[in-house]
Length: 322
Image (tube, rainbow, N blue to C red):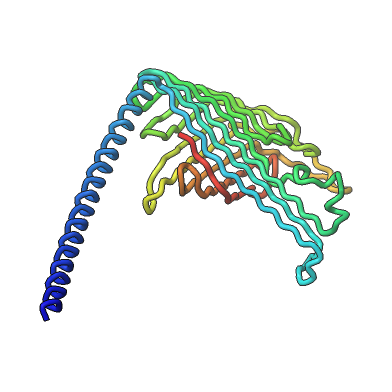
């Protein structure tokens, strides 16, 4: 009986000690968790202060730069898979969309440079003979090709209004200036908010380069140039999102001389138009350390290139550097 009582007493003491130890450990865990939260808050506050300091340094230096890009790769192959529509086939697609800017802003002057490059290729082969054809490779089957480069400089009358001059090239890499446009002009630039630049250049000279085989010849004309550039970063569901967009348009003051087009035995008089507008966009959803999902899309209307509305879209992995 004494032994039984002794075992009960020891068991009770052990449970009490274990309970006390568990409570002490839980208290220690809570204390450490609170310490971690305090440290994280201090780190976040310090990072915010560093960001503010960097903004001030950027203002003093005057330069801001950034690059964002979308990369998409898709590869498929079927080898004698009978249930497939094409049992022996291969399809490869590759797309690249890069937008970069280099900007200098000072008290009285600014210089904004921006470039957008979009390239895509797609190769589909339905037989081994197609696959082995040396004249039918991926990079010989381009599907999207866009090149837009602009340089804008100005002198500020006020904080938000400036006299400015700009040169802009809008074409492609593979078919350089076939078609394409080149503009150079002067006017005013409006800087209403940070990261938004709107220019109106009523004194602009535009050169339109037609595609090969076009009935229109290379033409130069005077008109008004309008362009808006905007880029911003915001947060959605705790993730960083970057958006950059460019809208540019040219409105000629006069029409070009009429031309005669032979339509297979019949001819008609056509007055070519060099009125055009282009809208380019790049949207990136960051998932991890600058890497995320990117969406690119654009619209273009230029009658001297095509009477139909032009468009493109792209989806793939993205990477941003600011």
